[in-house]
Length: 333
Image 1 (cartoon, rainbow, N blue to C red):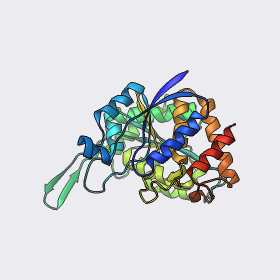
Image 2 (spheres, helix red, strand yellow):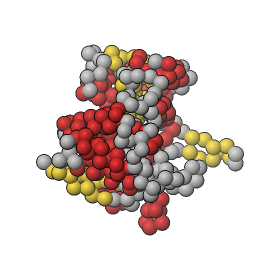
Image 3 (cartoon, one colour):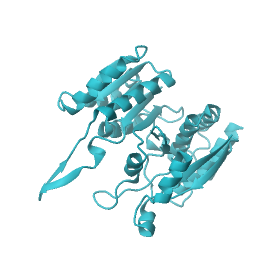
Image 4 (cartoon, helix red, strand yellow):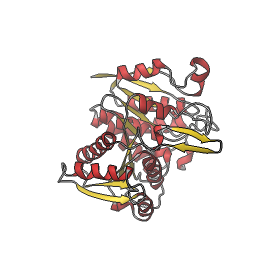
């Protein structure tokens, strides 16, 4: 079977890690036609927008997209392309697994968590205005529909991946109406999945418990801002954003991305680590119905990093990007 995938190289090291990821995925033997489109700062100069319509249309046509890191100005400038993609394509579920890779030194062993983050509501709705000079108001939007579909997504993912427990993370002790609604919906949805344990945890306590003992959690689901923070925390438990995959899922489309920065300081030097985007590519193959190819990539990553002899320098090895990719492809043969 052949596939068409939209690939967005991104900024900084994005084109390098995108090329590396394509090379490894192609080595699985799958027939994939890569449709390259662009987004980011350069597109603002060319098209007046960081997300041209032709890029969005290509994702809609092909349904699957793989995206490298895209820089976002802080405080000023254009709106985040990541946020815009999620809203325009209704990619309401952010799927962030965090699994220990042998060979990467971490505080805890055998971390194996999934964070499910609501992607379209909360404070990231972007509803801000200046009330009077010196006072800005931001609206945090939580809806019954948005809550219901992200909770459903969490339980369905838990069932698909044979997980035992779903923990709903909240701040309903303070945000009594908004997070109160989120919890009310979660309790109702949980009754549809009696085979999966249901749990609730306050977000600040969750952060502390994750640092102390992440094994007490399995699948965690939460609103947008909490999910942004907690998913980066769980990435830190496995070695950082450089080895953390991510997927943005909707009912019709899916975008898989590296969530780390564009690292302009090392762009073009050939030393970037493509692991995060590569593992995101493995998630994409899984979603496309190619679990064997996805598992071959994950096993190759585990083998090469575990041996520690042919990894990129940020992982403690002597290799550049090209040499690391060659080692991964050899590990799949």
